[in-house]
Length: 307
Ligand code: PGA
Image: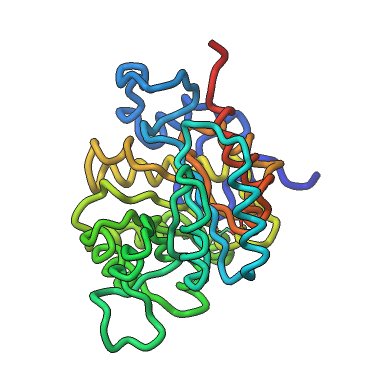
């Protein structure tokens, strides 16, 4: 093995990393946010937890992207409806627009429906777009915005994404606000710069952070099978929470869910979920398989301690 764990983990990160080969929660605390880790027990969580810097409920979203047919989606919904899901997790699925109605009419109330995109303002003469009002008309509660596929394939820019988030929030949708760096940005040491710039675009636009879940999705990990290591993900999540504390507020930082996305599956979710700043997942490929998605949802048990 040529590269040490420490050098692998710190590749591309701009700030000096803590001693990552002996990484533990203490070193992460002192690096990023020594005054954020107030004892969670003081806020009386509904369950005993370990390893949670945030105070929000675990959140798992399934991003079905441009996949599925009426038949495959009806099977997926049936699998999800019959799955045994841990109660203390917010679960959301994001079907393609044309299947939202089908899903909404057949899926258990336990699972909320999200859109994968929404228009930046009130509907009207915008060919091919879907408005927030139309989504609400179908009982949609969430929208994914700023996904890397929309940033890098469709060409959406930070400011436009910020405006979309602001509009959706103002109209009462929850926003899964995606951020994340490209491989070349990580290798150039720009991971934090990129993430913070994308965060700032949301912060500059949104009226409130009450209904925002941040999804950190390193682009090099999306759909590639190359999942970020738990330590790599934790390092960026902790930095994001620190950024929120410094640039939004000390109140918003712990309560905002910061979820990880990028090749999450039933085999790696339990280790990732153990990390204190990982508050859930945004799942692509593995969310198309009902039983595996249920396993990922249930990785919340990694955060529980035996009574
Ligand atoms: P993946 O996609 O799980 O297939 O990597 C994640 C995402 O794009 O949200």
